[in-house]
Amino acid sequence: MTAFVDVANMARWIQRDGVENIITRMAEYLEKDFARWESYDKIPRVASHTPFGVIELMPTSDGQTYSFKYVNGHPSNPARGYQTVTAFGVLADVDNGYPTFLAEMTLLTALRTAATSAMVAKHLARPDSITMAMIGTGSQGEFQALGFRGLLGINTLRVYDIDPKAMDKLERNLKPLGFQITVCDSVDEAVDGADIITTCTADKAQNTILHDAQVRPGVHLNAVGGDCPGKTELDPAILDRSTVFVEFPPQTRIEGEIQQKPDDFPMVEFWQVLTGAAPGRRSAEEITLFDSVGFAIADGSALKCLRDMTAGSDLQTEIDLIAEPEDPKDLFSLVTALSPVS
Image 1: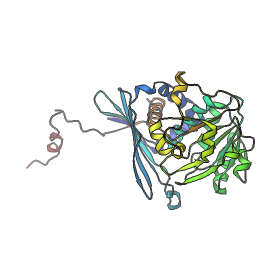
Image 2: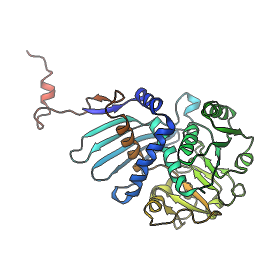
Image 3: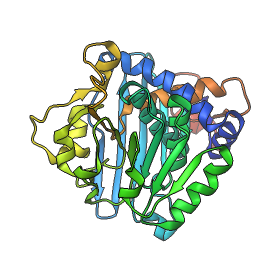
């Protein structure tokens, strides 16, 4: 039998343990797995692009546990009554190939993305950072805010979205949780005085959400929205002024902000910061930029965190996913056992 966490139990888990607490715990799993980055199999995600969006598979393995995530990204979906992103994921035992854990990952991906952003910022943002600007306040907004508060203590938000309803939604959800929120009329107003800038928009286009002149020295940029070919958010000049940190360069070159740059554009693989192979922030004036696209190793970390935090509870059920005849060589016996007797 395969352990399973469905949508209802995922929501119950989050309600039980709390978004901020889960993201903080998940960041520990991420740090541990990123620190042993070289032990994992790594390939860019396998993507099927259409005019409507993209469907992707994200596999990886450390030789003991194999994981993959199925995920889509369809920016026009909300206008049609669907989610922009849906996902599910699997953990499997490398020893015998059996899937051991299956879970919905639409909610889990939101947690994973925020946990990764905050985990990276903990190592790259200035230690005295107190204010975050959020450009784009859609589905990821609340998770990002809670992640940055959990790991960095950021409680002051300056927010801007082209959709006023999205900003109202974010304020309605976060103000009761103790955040100080300023709803802004422009990107210029939102980034004024911000120590950290998070960009997270959904439009699948090469946009300039943030201009070079809007980024002052010392800022940490958490660029979340550029996550597929042809989709960017930043003025290319910002990258030239920044130290750019990435997850897996072959994937980021295809999907991230650096798709705007030549192949020899300099960047730092973030795992090297954790192991001491490369420096993180080197000065208070340096602009650090996390060109985040999401990578399979982080999804595996999130699945393991979910599995462990829900183990032994009624949040996990079991499903009969694997055909297991008494004789491993006699698969047909499962059919004949159900055949009517003449």
